[in-house]
Length: 435
Image 1 (cartoon, rainbow, N blue to C red):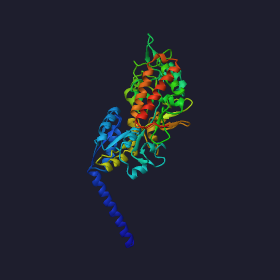
Image 2 (cartoon, rainbow, N blue to C red):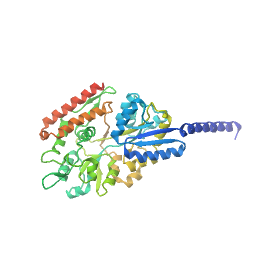
Image 3 (cartoon, rainbow, N blue to C red):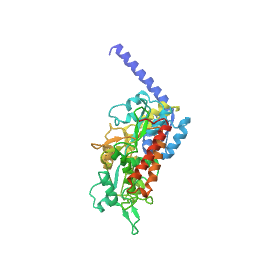
Image 4 (cartoon, rainbow, N blue to C red):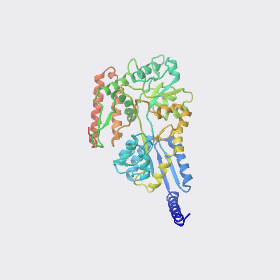
């Protein structure tokens, strides 16, 4: 080896060692706190801490998880005054809201490169992790709904396969309901989201999107603007669809029954639509329930909702570089596999097959594989998201209780018009309205 080449190699090695030493000093003596938005994120976060500590044995990482609403309240109270954790998990709507308020830091170049790498995520995801063209979050997990159904109940009713259309879903709901001797429902044929208005409007939209071909809040032409999309016949028909399953001769659900994942695990629900986390939840809380999962039923359109949670670093953080390093560790395959297997949430990465997880639990398949002909949609990330979805949900859920709307399409049309006008007023009040 000639002297010049040797000196060049030595210089490269010295530079690398100096850089590595700087990294060890920066990360090794750091302490960061990480907040997760679901209790079921504890296992993947613990795995991320384990991997991170292998690379940075002197580091200190405190990973805390909360129930979603508690988490949202905690971030809302702490982030604006610079007291949030060093790394927080925010859905795309909250990412947009806090980025717009200047609360989130811009991701370093290497993180931005990961986010914008083609094929790493669904094509729409990088935009949901960015604000004004700058990356502010690293996509972690998400996933939309599929149809959970009790296979024993379908067999009892002589139904050999799950419903594939909205009309079939309605018919199955009536066939799968169960009543006692007094005519009271003891089992919901299809469980409708009747509480928690924000979630209620989201689940109502699972049906409206199939009829309408769009969501109830749409993007305006100008960036950062939105408008309501409720004043139409399709939204009224979707409301009537729900009302008929709650009143009258086709009544297949009731407020007195257990609902959602709890009701499904208890055997009080034959079908409902929810995200993939219900799989491990039902296996744990309803071990005697035999169930399967099918793609969300379609109508004229086939639109499947998706949801994204980013890991974000507040601008006020004292250890932003270290927090981003931990966020990158959360992207590693071994962490993503624990996320998928233990929590049931779908990892955002699409450049990993997760074939082992899906092979061990085939019911995950409808959540990770997009069926031909389906369109994936995300909710509009308006800053007024929480108020919009909550107050629209309040109007819809109040209408669910109104038996006079049974077979009353004009009455349903008046309800969705009221929700439409309310939504537009909220957008105008927040300076976000624009068609």
